[in-house]
Image (tube, rainbow, N blue to C red; front, side, top):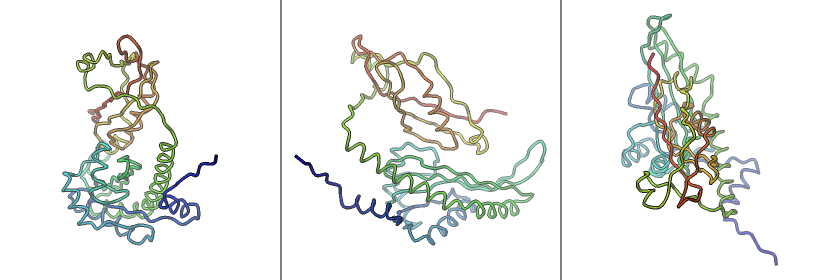
Length: 294
C-alpha cells in the first residue's frame, strides 16, 4: 500500500523558490544600536542598505521600537532564546538585528589618547530565538570625527549586509530541515532536571554531577569587545553519564557561546539516578563571564 506524503503548499513554494534560484523575501526588523547618535546612525545605515534589496521586507523602525518597548526590551545583547522569540514575535519579523554602536575615548600604554568607533551587530531568528550571527566592526582615529569617518570606510569595505543576508538564508534552510527531521522522527523526550537537589530527592532522583568542573576560557573576541554576559546551556546527559546534546538557552555572542559549548563537550558525568537506576536527564548549566581585570 502506497502512502502519500502531504507537505503544506507554503513549504513547497518556499523550496521551489530556493531550488529555482529565486531568493524568497525575508521579513526583517532592525532596532536602534543603543541610544547614542552613532548607534542610531549605524542602525539607520543598515536599514537604508536593506531597503535597497528586493528580497527584504523591512519592518518600520517606529513600529519595531514600540513593539520592543511593549515586551520590555531595553537594549540587552545577552538574551534567552525564549525572550528573543518573544521580541521577534512582537516585532513581527522572521529575523531581527540588534546591536550597540558608540565612539569612545580610549588610552593605552603605546597610544595615550585615541578614539574608537565601533558597532556590534547580532542577527537573531524570531522562530527559534537563536543568535545566528554576531559581527563587530571597529576603527580608530586621533579625534572622534576621524574615528567615525574611518568606521564608515570600514563598514563600506566590509559589506556586512550581504554577510547578514547570507547567514539568514542558510539559517532558514537549516530551520526547515530541522522541522522536517522533527516531523519524521519520534525520538523519545528526555526529562528535564528539577530546579534543585531537594526537589529531585522528593522524586527519588539524584542529579548528574561532573567528574570535574571545567571553566570556559574568556576568548580574545570577547575581550576586544569588552563583552560580559551569561550563557545558559541545556545538556542532555545519558544514562552512561556522557554528554549527548547541547542547546544554547541563553546566548551572549562574541565567542562566549562557542567557548561554553566546547567546554561542556569535554565534561563527563556521574549519571542521574532514580531509585538506584541510571537514567538520562537534561540539565541546565550556567556560565557567567566577566572581563578579567588588567
